[in-house]
Amino acid sequence: MIDTHCHIQFKAYKDDYEAVIKKCTDFGMILNAVGTQQTTSAKAVEFAQKFDNVYATIGLHPVHLFPTYVDEAEGDAFVSRQENFDYEYYKQLGQNKKVIAIGECGLELFHIPEGKNEEEVLQKQRENFILQYKLAQELNIPLVIHVRDAHAQMIDLLKSFNAKINGTIHCYTGNWEFAQEYLALGLHLGFTGVITFPAKKTNPKPQWDLLEVVRNIPTDRMLVETDAPYLAPQAYRGQRCEPWMVLEVNKKIAEVKGMGLEEIAKLTHENAARLFNLSP
Image 1 (tube, one colour):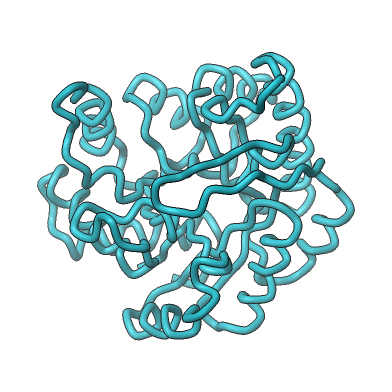
Image 2: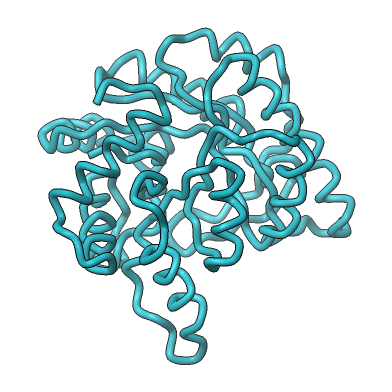
């Protein structure tokens, strides 16, 4: 299996990352350690250099463009460190042969910094995303795209490039309508443990919509990921998520599509290997 999006270099694993990576190695797994700003991107490269089965994605998450209070249920609350995308810094970091993508970069309207309006935030996010898109093109590697509460805006931005986009929408939780737009642009969709969650009784439609995407997506465009340490699958809900739990995501896809687990695991592995130019 390939966990196409995890944060094994984050402080949530500072005391036991070697044990977690060993467990993943015993599962025969490959991990894509994804950066969110300069220090976590550099740390991802450091881990990729240290561990044979770890690769790195480097980039600037939109939440780091302004000081923003972030309080995720599965992780520590923090105020994000403000940065702008330093093209030359990331270009130099990207010379490492184990850097396989640029990201996670994108648009984020879930966390709006205090005192900022939505259009001001979006404009800065767009500018920094375009720089990362250009670097991915220069380095000839894919994009790992973060989108939260901004699918329409992201689709418009991607269409403005007038080109097929090499990359994936990380942690896809949108509907089939948006999914078809992304697929038409050439993108893959990454599914996390969110697809294993039960539908909320008060508002089941988002989960029904997401499972419709899982049901309909072409089998050559789906990826599996954990976003560890966040979003543990339902079987491990309330625990720190770890990359080996991506097995639960494969299981759910197999269930929804009415296919065998081994077949789904093989397909998602091959898709990731092809997108990120890894040996199958």
